[in-house]
Length: 306
Image (cartoon, rainbow, N blue to C red; front, side):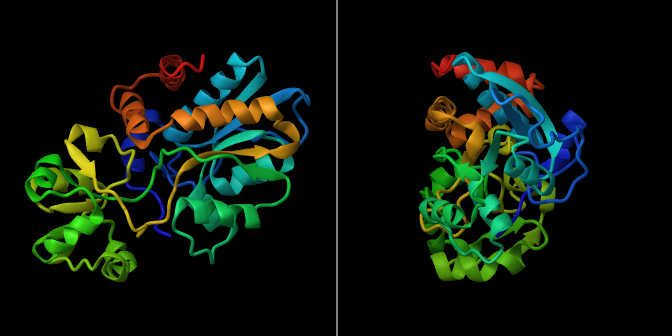
């Protein structure tokens, strides 16, 4: 699958974190952990240890999970900004971590590189079949931090564009941009799934959102929680035929450490998380430079979870 992330450069500069990807980083990328990972069994049995990858969106989500659990009387220890999935996955499998905010499509690609599932339901089914017995993926949120084809709101209104499928009638007149490998990875996929044939493909990389705004390209691959969507007045078109694999956010838990209170609390968080809402939260964190725990507390309060 197409992995994250162009946004890492901007967000890493804001947070001075080790670059890794996803709404700020790439959970699949190798990285040196920036904080010591917990070792299995190091925490008291009654303590739920909430970890996160080393990129800002994951740290924010970890804080949301931790504060929601604390509000239910759960004793929580936070271990934010640990490292990449290669580091963190072993920690939750061993019980050193109890809860981890995950991305279902990226996680499936990690545990089953041959997976071809695209829809959320199929991706989750694949995870249930491939995850080790020690861990469990809980109910995914509607929120996704994944690939999209994005245009300006003005262009979407002018051309009556809501879905990627709507581009088929005009794609031959459009220039599309994205990472240098975007054409190689997605040209046949777009043609087979939606009948899209673009006029040309431009390697816009991390400047994609700005290139859409300036009109250098009309369509671009921008991740769905990139704050530049808000800053540049853009809109991500709905992927109604699942050209991209779903990457919904979902808690991954160590089964032995997650009781019913933990699971129901995390499910309640997931029920409130939307892509649009997370996009706004990431703007506060990455652009407005608000402290993630403060942003997390405000969101939980507004959603009746504190």
